[in-house]
Length: 249
Image (cartoon, rainbow, N blue to C red; front, side, top):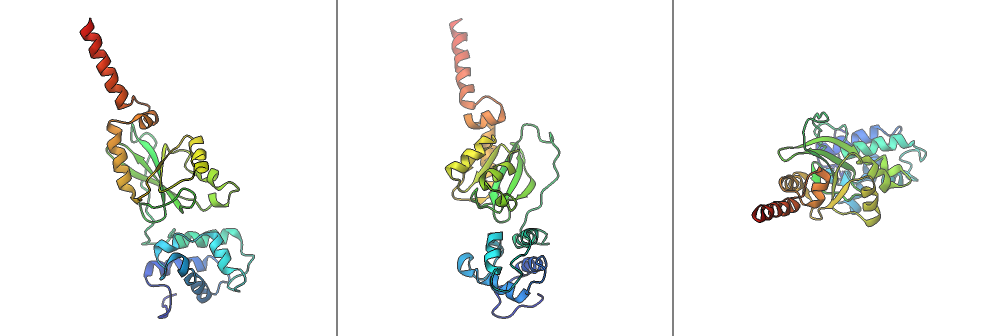
């Protein structure tokens, strides 16, 4: 895949690398036919192919494209299909927009929270809980927000209860930021003691985390409960109560 034709849906090096690695993960694949099949997704994901559109491709999409088109054996094993999808998402592709986690040791950031962010591209909050391709996991203190893990949701989508599997994937987190989440899914998230927060406009994950960091100085009740401290509103009430007691004595 060193060259592409004028009509090829591949328009940049990142996309070419992703598609090339994905094709290599599928034994016996006809690369040209595979590229053409991915290009057929244009009507659904946008043409030409981009890192953003490839990030939304699922195993189900690949199966639908390949079955009956003689591109690959319909009996292709699931692990090969998953590997192909991971490459399309940017995993294992040098120079892709997949963020790299930083080292973190438990207890290294006292008073911090663990926050999951539903994401499809780079370090963006641009995913719905039930369909995002990955969760970015940050350790957040008032002074720092550090990306400590990037968790693919691919295996969770193979589970019988996808929402429960996604909730289990982030069960060690305190908060999850999403663009949207349905009621039943939210209930499963709460059940594993994770607080879901909707951020409908999306945007850079850092923007949402900075708002959280600002709130940590004077936490509202829901955040105070997670942090294990007294809510700022209650603290003010107690101060006023103590002042009244001093005046009365």
